[in-house]
Length: 246
Image (cartoon, rainbow, N blue to C red; front, side, top):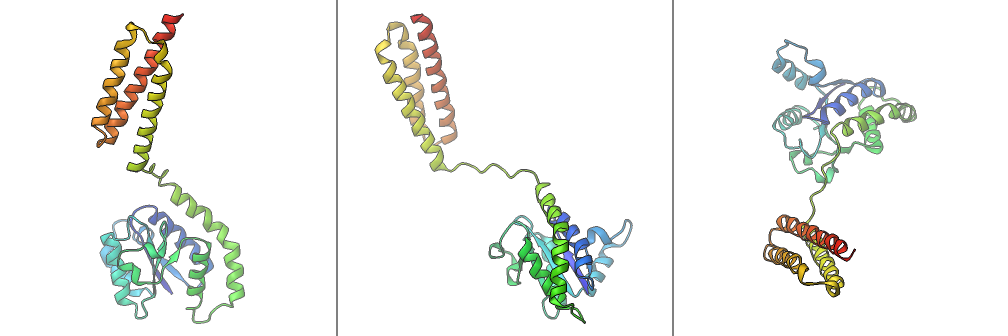
């Protein structure tokens, strides 16, 4: 049984490669094929790709949030869906749930890239053999081989680097700004009794910065910068006050 494995970008390619090698051992009647491995240098890749699509009995699409609408993935998936009479096309969800697929692939029964999802995929493929292997034997082989695949999946996902730090919401930034302003107000109140005429300039500087922040609350990032200036000014004021009192 020829299994065409479609991929686009990383970690889709690395996972497709790992799945390809692993399936050859676990589903022994299968012949997994992917372009990254089977098309050699100098070959007419378009002819080989068309031939592979034509000869495939099963399609496995390695889907991520980023690539699910990639033109090449859509082309291969469409060709497979058109060719396969029983529409044996399975999206393999790498970093999203099947319900999160928004591309045309949502029309097909997907599997998740975890122990349960891969187990169900193996059972589906085993059932398509001309002489199916007893379920117990498939289970034993899966249990023995899953530890070989799991770290490769983790390595492929980790190779993409740490996820971007989530952007802070407007509400979170507003809460922080209000908190900082209140902290500065309380600090000024606690220092008020020790003020003399030489400190007026420092307080005027702080008041100016805070007024500017209030006028520019619609621009949260700029406001955060301004409030940081206010905090720095207050720190400088305190330091000079300690020097005078000493």
